[in-house]
Image (tube, rainbow over all chains, first blue to last red; front, side, top):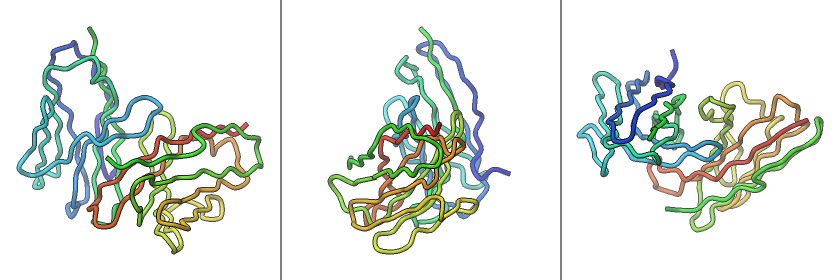
Length: 110
Length: 116
């Protein structure tokens, strides 16, 4: 079983749509959780950290369910500029080591 | 956020040559740097963790004699791909973490290596 699993997609949605991505992780002792965004041929950029209480940043909402070892990202009112690959990332400890999921590709169409 | 640079951004070399990639933290001291590689349509795979002044810790399956890592200062780590072969062609990305940053990493822009 992969340490971090995501549906690779692609998710093709029209502008303005709401889209949700899910991710599961295998290590129940994992410490920190993140969503990164990666554009084609670029480095990943931190989108947001994920907390058990859930957190929201504008159109983006992230949620963590430790009991189910499940992380989600919700994007509301999709923009063309949201088209990218979204990486679910888990830190199994506080050493800085990050485990990346395969990524979910989102394509927002006009 | 903090800035991490990588050089070169792109390199094309012949099979059998060695290639050095530099990773620099420009405005903070990076106690730990990480090296990743990414194949097309695949996720980032951690290759090694580099701490300033000590030997790098390599992930399982990564040959330490093939991928030499040096972290000589708090702002510079280098990855040398020795005797490169076409299968080493990949996107190599470094990231840097400052002291006490609690898993917050800053990524370099990546180096695209093509071995002919």
